[in-house]
Image (cartoon, rainbow, N blue to C red; front, top):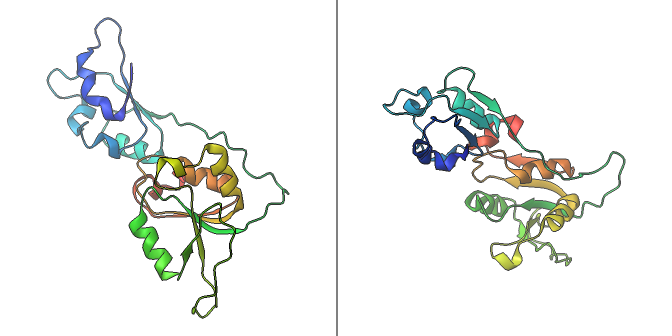
Length: 206
């Protein structure tokens, strides 16, 4: 039985009797919220299910699990994005300066936009903003990838088209696992800038 990391409290309902083997797929670390303790990893608790395998979606998860589990019980099992990216030699028009995920880390993103004397432009808005009083005479344009409401969210094809137009992708929100957007942005030729929270602190995961 393969359990997501947020359901580890249910493992004990299905003991290993009868040939059942358990595995936890750590798609994140944060979403477990510490429910799977060091004693669980060491399998020292009374009645604890033993022989649990730990499958890690990110280097972040592997580092967390390997620090506690028994030797040989942790391994990587990640997924790959199906994004085509930008082919070598392909010409693309980078008419968007900075794009960002509006669903997380906005307290950091808002501070960056203010520090850059930036202005926010919707992805479907082609109007050029008026000059500002900044020394360079213009504002840095920031474009959200979709919006906060469900009606404003982009489908995968729309996200891909937007990233292929962008020069820089920023993401300073939490990274509970190996997130898709930073990897898709890199495959699209964007310069990717993140914080170091969670999986973003591991180069293998960004």
